[in-house]
Amino acid sequence: MSRTPPHPTREQIELPLVLDCLSDPIRLAIVYQLAQQERVSSELRCGDFNGLAGKSNLAYHFAKLRECGLMLTRVAGTNRFMRLRREDLEARFPGLLDAVLRSAAKDAERLQLLATCDVVEAE
Amino acid sequence: MSRTPPHPTREQIELPLVLDCLSDPIRLAIVYQLAQQERVSSELRCGDFNGLAGKSNLAYHFAKLRECGLMLTRVAGTNRFMRLRREDLEARFPGLLDAVLRSAAKDAERLQLLATCDVVEAE
DNA sequence: TCGATAGTTCAATAAGCGTTGAACATAAGG
DNA sequence: CCTTATGTTCAACGCTTATTGAACTATCGA
Image 1 (tube, chains in turn purple, brown, orange, yellow):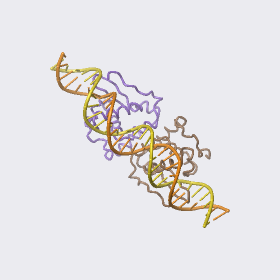
Image 2 (cartoon, helix red, strand yellow):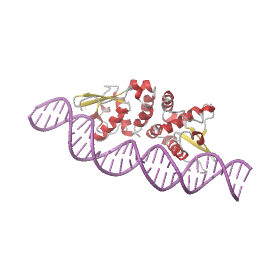
Image 3 (cartoon, chains in turn red, green, orange, yellow):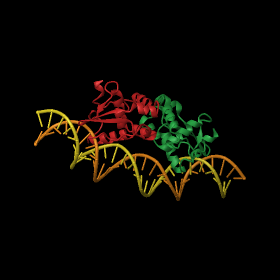
Image 4 (cartoon, protein in one colour):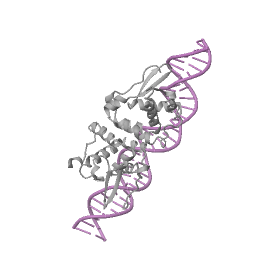
């Protein structure tokens, strides 16, 4: 549990995998909250998402988001901090992430993006 | 087989469903070719996509694309013509479809978007 | 050293997805 | 009318996915 888990390189990021990752409501909520938090600290701990699902289920979704190249995981003690790979995504798919985030923001209520959110209140 | 199949209204179009639809390589290729064709006729027949998969498999993907609101099916004799719901998508999720299409265009080869395509040659 | 905390990994389950071929429905053309 | 072409529907299959709880690992603090 000590080392940084594997991430794809920028060039290895694939469009279908990214879109599939973003199509899951829980993962979309994670990405959305990471984007919200960027204005403050740019990083969030796993535990900050406990309202979205159980721990092991979250670990599953975190792995998917990491493996498809959407986010980066940094290990620090017993905590793991994660942030969006904005630059890499912008380089590979210009404008895509922002378009998805704006679309999600428009439907924030419908998508329950802020439900049981321990995070955004800190903003 | 005679009547126009059901389509969601503009407001019923949901972001996760759209992203999930676009995450499938075959459906992404269909959408991409529809977008290419827009410069010419804006519509394509089902049969124009026969290079992408078998007929019944295509019918399955067409239904998904229609039900999620990405495209519109018009019945004309034994043919069915389909086109992208550009205006509706732009109203619901501004910039999203274009961002996906530009991203797909960048990876056209990697995604085999033009392989066995009966269509784009007509352009 | 001992316990508490943070998060992952594993096995099991249930549900959904993509693919296929056969059967079917509809319309056009001779 | 009969045949052909276009496309859908159905049942079946194998595969992937999301979810859960239990077991496990690693780190921090007392």
